[in-house]
Length: 305
Image (cartoon, rainbow, N blue to C red):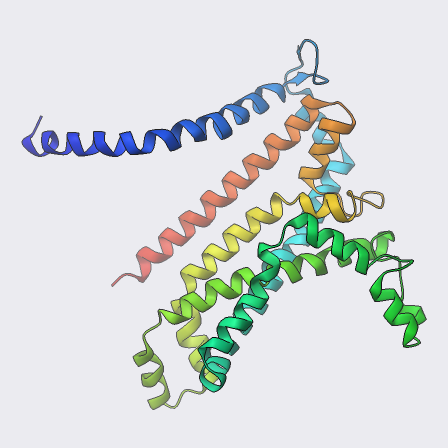
């Protein structure tokens, strides 16, 4: 063993000592339940009594389950509301607050507006869900009351009880709650851009739009990656908002994989099948995260001089 390796061994042992509590907690809270869920997914079990090993039957059943595919179809649509729309709006709002509001009205006004947009992120999901439930109630909700007062009776609907309006309404509430997160991330990214780059672009005759697209956006690409990865994973895991607002209904119009697994776990007492749904969802999240991170790492390598 070389002298250099011998010198590094005590330092590595020291790091392991500090990491041990976190690794033990991660093992107890994440790894053990995950392995248990994977094992149970190969069984028929109602939550009590003996487990009956059935191999891949639960996964074969998933392939022919229309509710399972409907839940992933809804997730694909919800990605539009939780990833694409908030990212685009957050990017535009960050540019306005950073380039216009902060310079014209001062950084305090920009910070106040940034905090206001971020407020839905710090509120409990149950609280925002209950408030939106009151606003959208078809009988005494504020939205239908206002529409009826101004004579727009035809626009008043059962927003969360009609299969045609339930999913778009849920998408609107999710987008409203999600905008603050990319806004904060992008404003932090814009603050680390060297001002001399903007000055050089202005000397070359670039307008605001060209500076934003050619200077700002490429330089905050790491923040954009982080926002897209984290919000996509959050969409795949979404549960609380669906539980509070619609319960996956009406019908299966707002059903998502995590709520579908919950129904099989706790309402249908089909724990083995619910575990199979959870295992597939976990595998998708891990694969997606690995792909995003590898793409980000490859782009960072190519950008280095």
